[in-house]
Amino acid sequence: NLTVKHLMGRALTDTKNFKEAIIYLEDLVNEKTSPDWMTSWSHAYLGVCFYLIDKYVNAKEHLETAIKINATKNSTNYAKKKLQEFQLTSYFEDWKIIETENIRFHIQPKHKIDNLIEYCNQREQAYIK
Image (cartoon, rainbow, N blue to C red; front, side):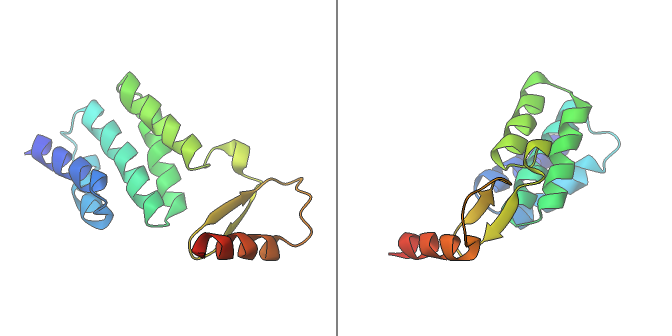
């Protein structure tokens, strides 16, 4: 049943079981009989899942697909919000990304930080303490 798969995928995403959720959601987006609203929401949730397992290119692709489908105002707005929240919009394309064990830093191009690695490591150490 498509509705059950959809609800399972969303519930698994909401409970942070991202890899399991992806199985249900990918099945739905590949199902030709899925209604547009379900396909759009499934792409949006796939975007969240992929982002949270560090597959940023896949995340962006799915979120943009949800927006292109434009099936419902809510699914489109949700995908747009997540693109912005995850800093995957074109505005952030030239930003430098540095990841430490616990923090993902997004540094603007015209920063005035002399040593980015040291800067990020200091903040990582402060977080750990």
